[in-house]
Picture 1 (cartoon, rainbow, N blue to C red):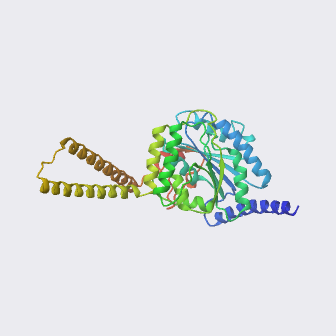
Picture 2 (picture 1 turned 135 degrees about the vertical axis):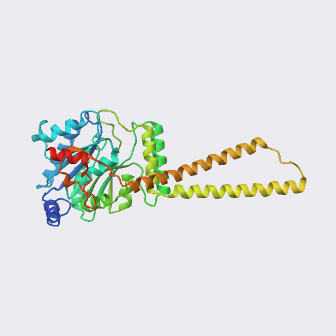
Length: 382
C-alpha cells in the first residue's frame, strides 16, 4: 500500500515537474515558449498515407494510458511530411483541422510539410526543432515502432529521475530478407569496431528523451547526420527496451537494399575517421611488400643471374595495386565531399507548409531554419 501511494505521488510530481520545467523555460525564452507540453511525439512521414490512420489510432490509445497513469499530462503529436508523393500531407492537414475526428484524439496535432524529400534525418531534425515537450519521443509511422511501448517508456523516465533516455532495439529480424539481416549485423559489428562510441546491434531511432538530450542533439550543426551515431555520441544515461521485429502495418517501405547501403556508408563516414587510417595502413603495407619483393628480385638476380619471369603475374599485381589506390582515393573523396557539403552550410530541411509558426523552428544560432523565401511567402500569405 505504501509503495502504491509512493508511486502515485511520484507520478503526480513528475507531471507537475514537467509542466513547471516548461514554464521555467518559458520565462527564460527556452525550448517551449509560452506552452505547457509534457510530451511531444515526433513522427517523420514519407508516403505513409495507408499507415497513418492506423498509427493515429494506436498512438491515441497509448497516450490515453499515459494520461490515465499521469493525470495532467499534456501531449502533442508532431508529424513531419518529408516531401511525400501520395496523400500524406493532405491527410495530416485534415487530421490537424479535425476533419478526421480530431475530438477522438487525446493530443494536439502539429504538422510540417517539407519542400521536398530531405531524407529521414532531415525530417527527424525538423520534428525535434519543432517539439515543445519537456519529454520528446521519436518513432516511425509504419507501426514497426509499437506505440504500445510509449506508456512503459514514459513510466521509466518518471520513476527514475537519473534516467535521461529510454531507447529500443530489436531482438529479432523476422520477416526480413536473409541478406539484409546479414548485412545489418555486419554493419553494426563494423561500426562498433571503427567508431569511438558503441551502437547496439538492432538499435532503433524509436526512443523517448528528456529535453536536455533533445537540446544536445539539435545543437549539433553537421549536415551529414546519422542519428543512431549521434544518440550514442551525446551520451546521457540510457535504458533499453528489447522487442521482436514487427512488420509494417500497411504500404511499402521506401528503404530498398541500395538505399540502406548508402545510409550505412554515410553513417560510417560521419561517425569515424578509421577508413582514412585504413587507407594509410594499406598504403604502408603495400610499400613494405613492394620493398621486400624488390630486395628478393635483386638478390636472386645477383646470385643466380636468372632473368626475372612472370609478366602476367606482374600485370595482375599492378592492376591490384591500382585498384587499391583508387579505393583509397575514393575513401578520401567521400570525406572531402562531406567537408565541402558542410562548408556550404545549407539547411537540413526547408519547410513548405504546416500549422507551426516559423518562429517555433530555430537552430542553435537562433536563426530560424524556416526563414527561407519558399516558406516566408507561405507564412505571409496566411
